[in-house]
Amino acid sequence: MPQNLLTDAKVRNAKPSAKPRKLSDGGGLFLLVKPTGVRAWRWKYRLGGKEGLFAVGAFPLMGLADARKARDAARELVDKGLNPAHQRREEQRQNIAETEARRREAEGAFGKVAAAWLAEGKPVWAVATHQQKTSRVKRYVLPVLGTLPITQIGAAEIRTALEACRQAGAWAAVNVKGDLSAIFDYAVTRGLVDANPLPGLRALVRVPQSESKAALTLAQIRDFYAKLRAYRGYPETVMCLRLIGLTACRPGEAADAEWSEFDFEARLWRRSANKMKAGREHVSPLSEQTIALLEQLKVIAGNGRYLFPHRDKPDAFATPARLRYLMRDLNIAKGASPHCWRTTFSTWANENGHRPDAIEKQLAHVESNKVRATYNKALLVEERRQIMQAWGDYLAMAEAENVVPLRSKASTTSG
Image (cartoon, rainbow, N blue to C red; front, side):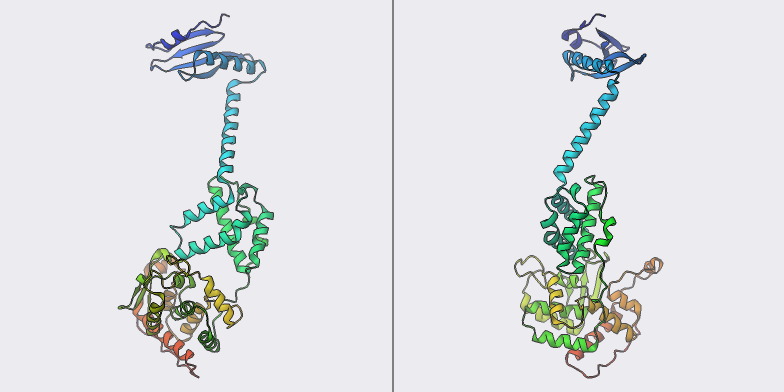
């Protein structure tokens, strides 16, 4: 069969016609000229007694000489009993797999993945939450796993990272384990790893039995205030703990509180939804004792953005960890933490006959009954204002070491 019947000039000058036409180069290779002007190389061959047609390439991306080389390479495959189209698809699949592997390697260093996860979560999380997660990752995770490819991190590497956390306390390891699981989930959704190994490693970390949310007794509250008066550390830390006690807010909510959130005339603290755990705006009435505390704090904190600014970074707020350390050092009760003030307030309010709806609203708890939550939109501000003033009076009497504190009168206002 004659070959090399075409020339470059004939190929370049091939014009379309009303019907597709073939310009043969011999040896089964021909140029298909379509009515649309598209020109493509095709090679006709026989394999296993059946005729096949191989799409060699498109002109002008593939010239005549290259088309002939591609035909010869395809013929060698056919001579070996291989289908050239199947072989090309396999090569393409391998190329894609190699490209994907290189991408994973480039993007898959654990430190890079963790940084991307933190960046994606920043607009969604509360400011304090993002700060806490960032701090944990930098302190406990990156020194151990930061430079490793995420695909090479398994149980042994994760165990090493969590063991380092345990020295800082059982809850540090629990929280870091949660961060690691979230980072791996993030990596799975982006094709950097095939699976999250953390769900299969539950036994690595046990959630400790919580003692930090127990309600403080009256004697312990008095002990707390007595030890605060004797404390010689940063006064801002003391005031932050006092604010948590007076408002029953979460420690992180006090730590990142901003002056712009406080309405002194209306005696309200308004926190935006993006700064709340439940993702809803929260309004908290302020007692006379809280207003007095804030006025004192203004003298110390100055006119910056935050009530409790970071001492080394004026544009940032103090870490809630400082509050935990102080509460621990005061040694009020076993496992006592700043969060125990919420339990203490809730216990006191319920024991003194205040309405559960108002108590839960003050604590910014989410209604578990979805139907009830839909209809219960009242803020109950005035009712809660009475509760918080009674609570402020109770703490003031406890600090003044009243022998028998008066029980607050349950509010009957619906708000």
